[in-house]
Amino acid sequence: MDSSFVAMESPNSPMHIGNLLIYNPETAPDGFVRFKDILNFFESRLRLSKTMRQRLVRVPLDLDYPYWVEDPNFDLEYHVRHIALPKPGDWRQLCIQTARIHARPMDLTRPPWEFTVIEGLENVRDYPPGCFAFVTKVHHSAIDGMSGIDLMEAIHTMTPSTAPPNVPDEWEPEKIPGPAELLGKSYVNALLNPLKQVQVAAQTLPGVASAIKGLITRDFKLSTDLIPPRTRFNRSISAHRVVEGRTFPLKDIKTIRALLPEAKVNDVAISIIGGALHKYLTAKDDLPKTTMTAMAPISVRSEEEKSDMGNQVAAMIAPLGTHLPDPAERLEYVYKQTSNSKAMTNALGARRMTEVSKVNPLLYMALGSQLFSRVSIAHRLAMPFNTVVTNVPGPPISIYTAGARMESMALSLICLTDGLGLAHVVQSYRDEAYISFTACRDIMPDPEFYSECLQESFDEMLAAAKGAANKPAAKKAAPAKTGATAKSASKPAAKKPAAKKPAVRALRSAPAKAGATSKAAHAPVAKTTSAKPKRSAPAKTGATAKSASTPAAKKPAAKAKRAAPAKTGATRKSASKKPARRKPAAKSAEFAKKTGNKPAK
Image 1 (cartoon, rainbow, N blue to C red):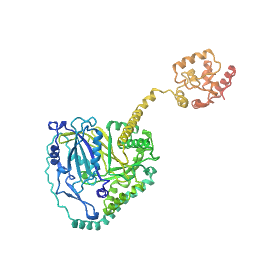
Image 2 (tube, rainbow, N blue to C red):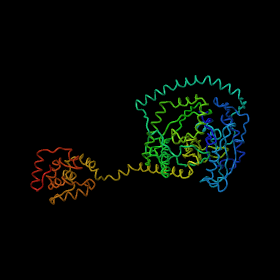
Image 3 (tube, rainbow, N blue to C red):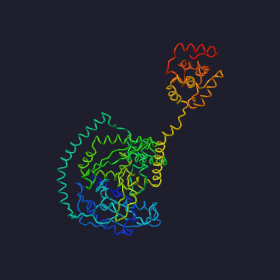
Image 4 (tube, helix red, strand yellow):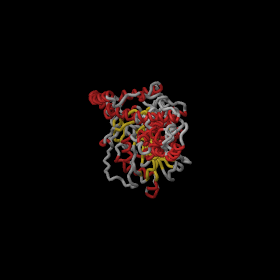
């Protein structure tokens, strides 16, 4: 997999990732950090990272995978640069400068990393005066997200102390192998590679069997939602980049989970991005009818491999729910789809998927990537996904470099390829979460607007979550029921015994009375309705009005309830709970004859 990033490298698609980090020097000695202090700090901690002094050596004609060699010509000052923003030094200027730095390819004949120190951040958001920034660049062949965190740990400390680590520096440079030596190694590997392919193929058979079993037992399903639509982001890209992002309180991200408690933080982030894409493409009148999809990397790196070079990642496809404007529906949809994709990936075996990529001949990968970019196949073939959403957890506590406290992981930067003109990174630091994106400038010339879409999508989801949290309390405060709810309202009335309050029971079954009634009957009506206004609310009309007028006297009123099984409309369900008896029904008929009303049928 490391070699695939080398093969995909081109002037328009440099394959490096990075960050924009903001530091506050108030915690440093004397409250100030010079560029020389940063160089000395880095030099004292080079021994903690394998990445920082190793370079790639490519085999002629890409007949074999590149080799990592300890660079005998390592020069720290080449890798750590220093610039300043022009006045006024605001956020937009910082984003433009970061995008320019990120767009430039690196020299792969040197260790594949660069740090640029940027001063002059006088008007960047709400950061204190005197802050400075790092724009980091590390080639994707050297690290994935998790080993990148390990690299960050090497150049940061847990306290403002700038003392060098108490670890001996045993690093020694190596001789760069010549073409003949490299070709000899490639010949041996070419003979052994078929055996490795057979071994890996045998290891993948259980995963294939597990996947087939999962389909049969419906542990997961293949859905058309995994097929991405064609969008403006899926075409050939230029060499220019734009970067932007938003910062959200981590507690609010977790609050949004109230919409669906079983959802993960990653599901919430994917839903926010899905909502932002819905708003952005709707404004452009370019929203596809079906959901867009994202490739979500999955780390398979073990604890023993934490500091190793290279990549240990698999991937899954995550539908974004861009076709759903409602935030609650979108989160539920994303959760179901990601759960299905995770089950499918687990069945195949994420680790086995990574092992398969290690035995693919580099020559074919290099030729394929060059053909893909030079023939502009991205214009003709649909990509397997529309964008990338990768989640990289950061440290939950403050960290320091050269004594300066990191204030923010403001932006995370990611590489793009032809057919993939937009990618996202979700990262956390302390009590904040960051959603950043990198895009081709020709495809997205308005990154500020898409950043606003991210904020609006987050605000909508947070408002929906708070509304959902307050909804049960609102229901208890307003139990009045009308219309279609009359059936449910009549159930609690039927549960009370009729022997205790017969007149009230008769009144509840027929609260709207018509026809002539006696004065004695009117008095309890007024008394009861004033005491129980909510239960007398469901008025009865039609056939029930006739029978409702019968309980004029106390004794017949007690009998009228038993004679009401033939009710229609909303009252039929509650009235039919006790069947009518013959003798009470006759008395009810006799009483109706005296009052001039017809008995209910």
